[in-house]
Image (cartoon, rainbow, N blue to C red; front, side, top):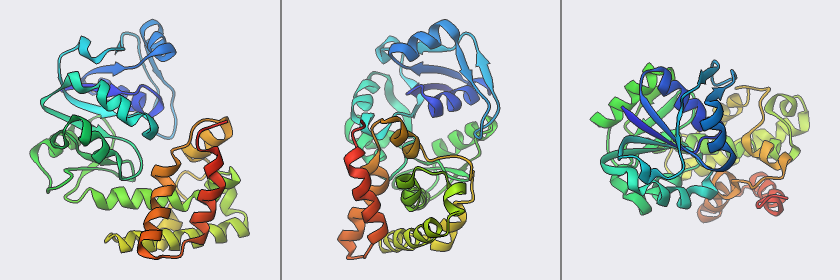
Amino acid sequence: MRFAIMGAGDIGSRYGARLIAAGHDVTFIARGGRLAELRSEGLNVPAGSFGPAFTFEDAQAIENPSDIEPVDSIVFAVKNYHLEDAAKLIKPIVGNETTIIPLQNGVAAPGRIGDIVGRKHVLGFATYSPNAIGELDSPISDRVQRLADAFNEAGLKVEAVDNIWEPLWRKMCAYASFSPFIVARLGPGDAMANPELAELHRNACREVAAVGQAEGFDIVAGKLVEFASFAPDSKQSMTRDLEAGRRLELEDLIGAVVHKAEEHGIAAPVIKTCYQLLKPHEHGS
């Protein structure tokens, strides 16, 4: 298959490397220093929690998508706050049969991309354990199964599902439940070793589970608590962004749950307080 990777940061590079290794034709869309790096040094992906190291000296990288023909699928791997600009940029390579796979956390990205390029092109994708892919409005289709097979052959562990909104909401709730850790600027392992933070996290899990259930999804607080044991030594991306003074995806990953709690009349003091504490840092230093 012919893939384009919109956003050649850490996640986009890892997905692209796996697909190249599996024999697919992959083109990275990048700009600035990252584009120059890909062209001069190739694609170098270090080993990590997402898998082994990869090096490809002749990685295909472009700045302007109109330089290539429409592709079969686009892995959409930019931050939520760059989403609209990136969606406009990829329009020249969206053919009639092109599918777009948003890797963003939260539940708003598919609709926002669909508003720009056409909803029929957009699938749902939840980066979870395992990852999940599905149509936005219908059961598993042939194109969803083909992509799930391609990803699994590339070692990305993806499950085709009939209702993608369930894992999307489960992931967003899990992320929002980590908000006390983010405010404390700690990874799950260090945070859960502190009794007070562990209690805040359990309360946050109960709050977000109530919101998810009100939205019609099977979100269980106990399972969210268990999820904190996954990769205990790693920090959430928002924690790393907060420490580095970068912009935060606050509205998409925590704010959305806070606002839904208000809509449903659900008390969520922990999540709301964390949201309020993070709000002054939303746009970076």
